[in-house]
Length: 470
Image (tube, rainbow, N blue to C red; front, side, top):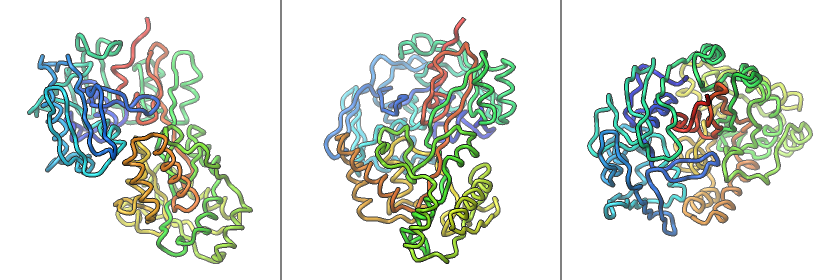
């Protein structure tokens, strides 16, 4: 796997990348799982109820589950595990957990949680890979104990790890291999070589240039899933000239999205439509007309804006993503062919996130996506969001977002989320040209390695899902 470091730990409050997440899910279980259709399904929380307004939630704990040390899973273990990320915790999800007003045991098999603000997507919050369950009071992260399919054997952070199958794992039909050995190989070419020479069963993060080769052979197979990672060009809607909605539309029509996918991802991606919700999200607006490269519309909106002579500077650095400068140059070229001049400002990689991001009027950026549409819209487009890159501040948008987050009727929520995507598409300050696919590879003997749109390796749960054919 790529995504490992010598500073990694089994401590659930420290996970930042793929290796730690995969190891965590081998040894421990989460509360809620997100399936291949991006829908919440039970894990250690067996069922749940929510009241109108989505502030009051009740969860039933799965019975008959034991930790690797023989202790029976109890409500107190769940409450302790959630509280690891609250209060004075250094956990990356501490701010998310601040929405919990209180949490308490409700008998011996239920947990009641009241939120400060309603959140109909709270199940997605509880599916976070940091929220893994350990025994009440547990703190020996050098020898983790969980309820997962595999027991801890050894771990050399940034190098390798090993786990062995737990007998009588509670998830029927999973945990089918006897042991898992994980080797950290952060170099993409070396990972591909390890797969092609049959030194490993599976690899993550297949580089796009190797994908076709892996998929064309009989010995190896490619696993591809549409993901939420997306490139973006952010316009500050509160600054001239980007406070003009017609100029923003002219810029949106000036980019060749199909070429963007072809050259940046070698075709392993899909075009964007100037909002952050990917096609894999169940609330993706499938009826919104897809915007394409259109020089005539560039000229129409440019003239309508009255800003034909405006100076437009695009700040970009490869600190955002590989080949960001090349792709920005392609953007400025397609815009120039449509009669729209964009000046490309290459800024240093070092200090980009401090000096350029959210400071320049127009800059290249990216987002990794979020598990729920309302989460993505909240973190990047809400008026009160700290990371509101485009300075998009609209009261009607905020009202729709609040309505979507507190509405438990799925059909009603969909109308709100679809409308927000349409608003961003037409009036927002983000140009979203493309989304990237997840690419992984495995030997033909590996069964159960299936695509998942949220994260690599079956959203971190690969080890418990695979089996090996004879």
